[in-house]
Image (cartoon, rainbow, N blue to C red; front, top):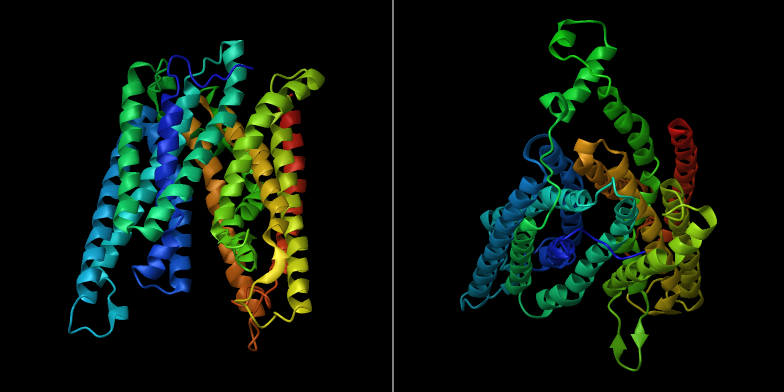
Length: 508
């Protein structure tokens, strides 16, 4: 299959998407260090603030997509959100510069003997948070619309381009991973070792480049997103008319007549998308673990390479992105042709099968994580390190490699499959909303994971016990939590298989 992103638009849109993901991960991946360091927050407060921001960032695409699909259109929404993105990043850089200057002035004050109190004022902190949330809402308008706009460039009436559209989702996923790898490799190092002002300024320049690249490509895009709406009405208004029809006859039915095509849009949302959304939450909860608990595991293990170099625990997140990039290529170039020769389907396997395989691999990754954590705890007991949380456990960190690798492969099947499913199944005028619903799965999964952690910790930390998530990881029980997530994932997978079969039978 020929690599075909777009017709006549080359690599403009993937380049803009890579630059935007570079900005997002450059801001979000290391913020816990900024909150606990420059702003002087406690670890608990920083974690709570970061979880709230991540949840907002993951759910805001719903608002952005609704505005794009019902009012502005995707092209205008991308331009508007890019400008808001740049404004937020500029203000964030300015905020960090003000905080840095005030902190430096405080520490250099000869009359100040306690430099540990040199933290920003309440007004400076509020200003920083306002700028921070502007970025969250801006990416909420940019991310779903740019991907949907890119998919719009394929002519579904052409068999070859329609088949290439499935490959587009694979290669688009690579661009997002590439942006994340670059940010984790470059921006976080600059933030930790050089300057936070420069560390926030680089994503600002990158986002400006993303907007310029997108605008330059505007002369080459062939499909307009400003398509005429049926009956000159917004799609959400047509959906509302269907709900009115279900009720007893009223004067509203005269004002809002229902066409034969209108119920199909409601059916697409309620019958096809909602069940898959709900049964993917177990998968999304597992998706939240690598950024938190997997990294905590790695921090206690032997991460040495050679006599002096030690791999940073957080750097193992890059392993997932690299695994994604590798297996997307294998999937597109090896797996699909082999599967196509067997199933006679251009995509190799159905979209439902792809998502199901992803959920199964995610289940296996968390099971393997539970097994490895059980072994880690046993090793700590055998070497008398249970009450020495800062001691390195004599167990190689490469024991974690299989769970990271399985997690990456599950992304290639599950995450990309969900992207394609929510785009294809959404009505023609609600494609951005469809992708936003896919993104909201991740947001709700992160919030659900945080809720589970809080509830379980409160329930298991009574009478002086450290609980499942004790600060001393050698007395914690992450293995119990992983087994709980495995059970949730298994139930979610069973529900997914049932509803996928029902939807498939209904379509036939």
